[in-house]
Image (cartoon, rainbow, N blue to C red; front, side, top):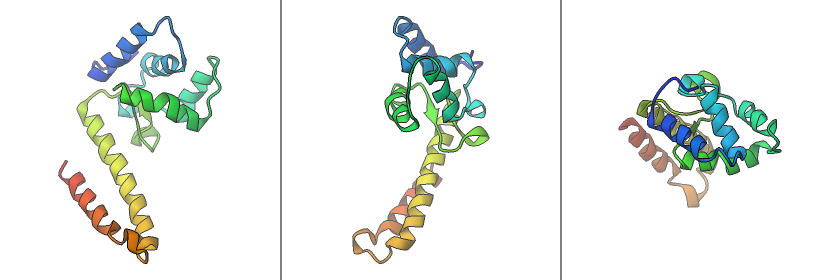
Length: 146
């Protein structure tokens, strides 16, 4: 069970209470995170671990469908966060603090910026995205101001 008492842990607990009679794949995903203390960034879990748990409970999701049909709706319900890097740098978890949300936000934006920066080298010759470097710099300043 989650060892912190954040609003996100409370959201997860409420979700489980409200959906006890409808143990669908989303329920099993939240149950796994909540029951096995995947709360807090340091307890983030690999996507494949939670996917295997859900599939072992009678479902057959692949990675992409699981992300779109399960994880994204749970993020939008203010229950969990997922980061592009597993282990100590991220994974999927129920947040324990607003600081973890801010760290996740910055990490995702920095990853997007890195990818945009890589693309900008190729895109320099394309007039339609010639301002990509200006956009990257604008976003980078916004991240620094957080």
